[in-house]
Length: 265
Image (cartoon, rainbow, N blue to C red):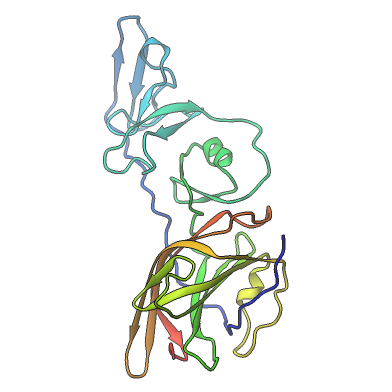
């Protein structure tokens, strides 16, 4: 369901990158173990890899301290940490015939994949609930030039041809669930054309692509004001329940020290 745009921002492109939280476990020293039934599990730092079948036919261990899986498997971690904090996992066979749907997921290699199946096929687990933030993603903050204090943050995602636009204003309420320092996100929107994040100062045009609005999210804002300047930061997830197929169900925002062009007021 498309909804009309409610945003009144004026933006142009400014890059600020943020990486998807991920970590690849370093392979451990070579070795092998043999169970009572003769099944083996091998590890290596280079060419040899862990088999997908461990003792007794159970999935082989991977991550710390077991090492990586074989070329036809991926490591499914026991918790949603991509193997951080010594979290191990089990080797699973790579899937085949993934569908073409593209809600967007972040692989444990820090790269964007259309869906979990695609990440698993490439050999990686995913960070659930977040879209991978790529080096191409660009953030910008600017005053909305209304008669009340209000500014906006946009995130352009060229790799997905998406534009995300947030409206932020002073509020004692929680807004859509993203707030901090006396400010809150009161409106959030995604459009299906990245060019919707790139236009000169002034009233923004109607989105070139389709648009969909959210009134739900979680996370925090930071707003630091000085006499002649203002800087904003965001660490949050915006949710788009019921969004069309081109839009993600959840989108991560992470940026620090964004200079708000024109100030916050």
